Image (cartoon, rainbow, N blue to C red; front, side, top):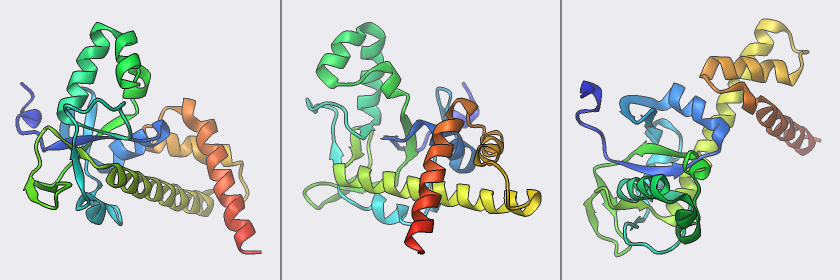
Length: 202
């Protein structure tokens, strides 16, 4: 057994845009791994600690389709179910093997707030609540694009201010271990954000 994985932190699974995974693993991944994914620690991002104190949910027996988050137990069940019958899992839980790849393991606090307002231990059956998951996704997005912005500024300092955005994005992908198949999508979103910021300053 891998010694690093002997004592895994408590985790829940959060749905995150695919092209952000490389950065999360590179910048916020801890030593523990689940499969080929490093557990990510969001506590360092602004707003994450507050979001992690929000109301949680127990979802193991949940009959609703998979949303933006899953407990460790539910994720294990879904993973096993997909290996046995992908069509049935898509029908009953609304999740495919490809969609499951969008979820990343997030290190959780030792204690969580239940929907009844009670503090209790964070167990494998505890998932992020609906509002909590949305808040954490906003935290990740903000942290990601702030990091891209900082990388862009440093790239401009080293290479001059005029360069194709795709050139910077491809360098970002290499830096963070992000597959370059995502470069075009990152570039489009980066250009959209730059244009929106420019227009707001007019």
